[in-house]
Amino acid sequence: CILCNKPGRPCASCKSIPYCSVECQQTDWPLHELFCKKLSFSPRPDSDSKLGLYFPVGSKVPELIWVD
Image (cartoon, rainbow, N blue to C red; front, top):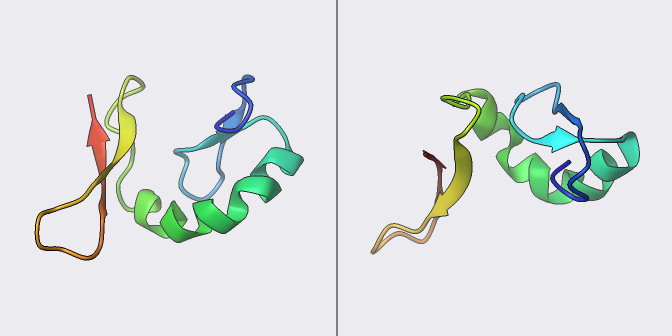
């Protein structure tokens, strides 16, 4: 689980962020909502990849990237 580190199942929409319970998913939703649609278009390349925020120089908007 992204919040409590217990085993969990991935978000049904983006299939990237794991949650152990409905409570954890609801708690994280305000932040996850911002990224969920973006993640659904960019599936995790492999199980070892981690999601990162990239702040390009000169840009006001960070990008989501997969990091090995």
